[in-house]
Amino acid sequence: MTADIEEKEVTTDDMELVVLPGGMPGTLNLEKSPIVKASVQYCLDNSLYVAAICAAPSILGHMGALKGCTATCFPGFEKELEGASLSSQPVCVSGRIITGKGAGVADGLCSAHCGGALWIAGIRCDQKIHSVSKLTCL
Image 1 (cartoon, rainbow, N blue to C red):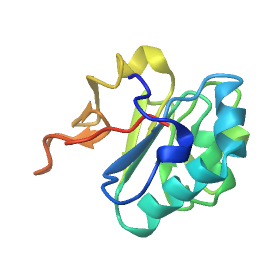
Image 2 (cartoon, rainbow, N blue to C red):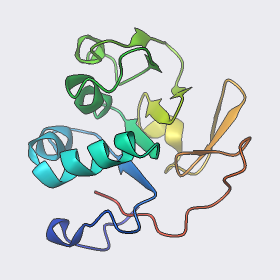
Image 3 (tube, rainbow, N blue to C red):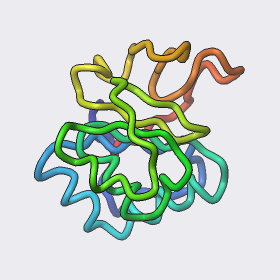
Image 4 (cartoon, one colour):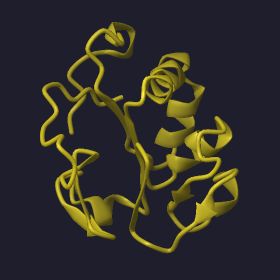
């Protein structure tokens, strides 16, 4: 993924999902951003997908978004997944929240298979959504 707009240009007008790529210090920078957190909250409030990889699921844990979800993350960040049932699986799909252990399991968010769900840009292909018209990388 390549960021195609600046943070100040992000709007929720045509937002379909949010993908948090993780890594360090990237995850810390994402979590500090009011725009990123507002975008995540918008997706959560409007039943849109939120995907987070590596350390980034910790952001969802800190926001309380993982309560009742099954989630995974990069080893060592498990305690940050507040309210989640932890999984050792490389990718977890829990409702509209998708978490991945690390970049190696996501293959660029193009294809990772876990528990019967094919992960394509954060969308489960066993559902009727097969494409995202505009993907904004935060």
